Every structure is written in structure tokens, then in C-alpha cells.
Amino acid sequence: MLQEFTQTFLLLVTGLFPIINPPASAMIVLTMIPDATPAERTELAWRITTNSFAILLGSLLIGAYVLSFFGISIPVLRVAGGVIIATAGWNLLQKPDEDESEEAAQLKARPHTGSLASKAFYPLTMPLTVGPGSISVAIALGTGSPRGGPAPGHFAGVAAALVILCASIYVCVRFAGDLERLLGNIGTKITMRLFAFVIFCIGMQLLWNGLSELLRSIHPS
Image (cartoon, rainbow, N blue to C red; front, side):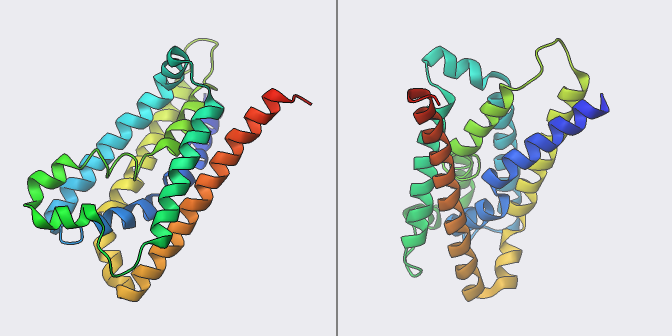
């Protein structure tokens, strides 16, 4: 049981954490809610965390069955997710520092409470925090679940990994404003550019992984 728990826990955390990238996601969320109060940011962090937990759990448990029902393969999902993530990273890299995003402008123009609640799932949770890349990875990892009957160690590993991942999302989103104040205006802009480049690279890697699998299926060695 301990071996199953350890293998499952490490596989999920190491496979999903770089894709979710909570610090980068939190900084991007911060740019869309720059004037949120600490109380509003706390509520928003909780909403994003619970939404992320539900999406990841659903992807791990039934994602493969949903894809099978619609006839979508894992490589195709990775290609689609890679394109979306790479495009988002590229747009963030090219975005002028002085321009406000449309989402941020809308949030500033309206009362925070209703506006933040309505955007907690889209776009702040999906695709900014848990997007196509992390969903496709979660589905791919879920297809490797043990099929020899109930495995308590596996289920415990899944639960522990999701708790750690979602806790990191909550902490990063909740305290992103404190990090911004610590880094300062210039430091925040530099950090955002670095994270945008990382997101772009993750998207390209995911795209390449999907394309490689599709090419191998066409021309098997």
C-alpha cells in the first residue's frame, strides 16, 4: 500500500504541478483583479481552488471515458491544449505593459463581489489556472490507474496529491498581492514576462508531445 501511495502521489504531483504552475497562474489572475481587497482575494482563491479540485478529480476519474465517448484521443487533446496554452503565453509575452487587459478593465468598472464570483470559474479557473494542458495530463495519468480491483494506496495517493496541488493554488492566489508588493512594479513585470515565456514553452512541449504520438501512429517504427 505504501508503495502504491508513493508512486501515485509523486506521479501526479510531478506530472501536474509544472503544467498548472500555481505561481504563474496566480500572477496572471492578479493582473485581472488588481484592485481586489484581501477579503475578496481570499474568497476568490477559495473558489478557484474548489473549482480546480473538481476539474482535476473529474479528469482523473472520468476524463478518459468522456474522451472515448466523443472519439477524441489523448494525442489530439494534447495538441489542442498545447495550441491554446502556447497562444496564451505568446499573447502575454506580446502584451504591452501599460495596457490593461479587457478583463481587468471590466472588473474595475463594476462592483467586485458579483463580478469576481461570475469569473471565478471562467476565465480565472479555466483556462488560466487549470486549462487544457493540465486536464489532458490528468486524463492521461488517470488512464494509468490500476485495474486489478480496488487499490486503497492508489486512492490515498490521488487524494493527497490533489490536496497538495490545490493547497498550492490557494496559497499562490491568496498571497499574490503580497508578492507583487514585495517585487515592486518593475519586478512584477519582469516576473510576468518570465512566467509568460514558461507558459509558452509548456504549450509548445505539450503540442510537440501530441504531434509526436500522432506521427508515430501514422509511421510506426
